[in-house]
Image (cartoon, rainbow, N blue to C red):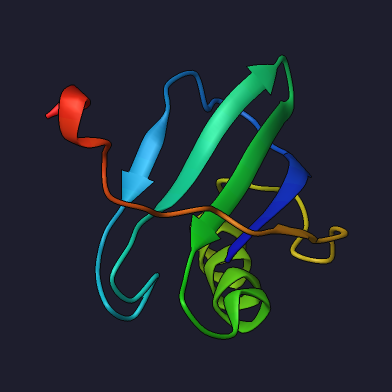
Length: 88
């Protein structure tokens, strides 16, 4: 599952990728600027992506990267499958 929120930010001008079991077990998290003062913060997780995203937003807020950790979360499935034989 993926979870993401549009956040208000300042001085984020490059995509940031976060790794670690405490952030997004088995996957990764991101902070990606979309327009001046806005970014997408999200992550992938096999279980409870909302809980991990809330903790990630709290971390970004504490680090001064975002203006609020109370943004609406959006969820979606990420289909994972093996590549077709002819694509390998």
